[in-house]
Length: 297
Image 1 (spheres, rainbow, N blue to C red):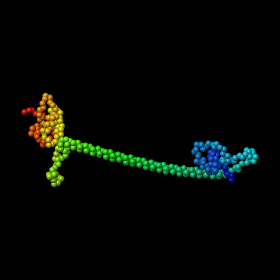
Image 2 (cartoon, rainbow, N blue to C red):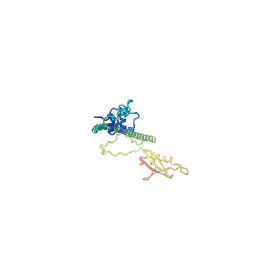
Image 3 (cartoon, one colour):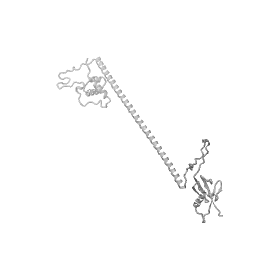
């Protein structure tokens, strides 16, 4: 049975002549299988149908014309000579084999493309997992930095509060040093007099708070006022002296001695009261006094 040439077989399988010739030439005429592989690999190339620049010769399945041979009427040739023609049954059988080969190549190509697609999908998933892990590490780093920032801010806030407390304590100590006594401190009991010990918590008498200082506001006849802090054990005369030194000059010359009155309950303090401590007169921890002119006797 005569065989079709590689070029004829490719044309029988439906490939264009120019594309089939190009495939055979570029594969070195190594057979129809190599040409089919090239055609399937390059079927999507934009220049697949462009012809080759060099003559193809016998690579395309044609017999080259030698210098000693002429054309169809040349010596050694007759018009009737040529390859034996194939019967229809032989042609169909050869075409069937070629189509099976094409189908096999197509399956191999599809399997290869499927493997490549699976590999690409595995790579894509691996890259996605790596990206997700990197994003999670970034979020964890952000959370760690935020927690450290909160701890730092809290430590700074505590330090600021401590500085404020220390400043308050210093101010109290300075005021106590200026006016005498200890601001906000309780008189310490004598070591020889520990005091009564309550038999039980339910029988403990309520502790009466004692104040070392007294804040006095003095209202003057002209509507202004003076405010000063005195020690609780100071005499009322110290308040009167303070008012006489700070009330200012009155029109008309001399200053009259002042008379101190309590607002509520209303009470006029006598000369004897001037020798009594402020805490004994009920003016601790704060009180409002009114200045009235004292008529000379």
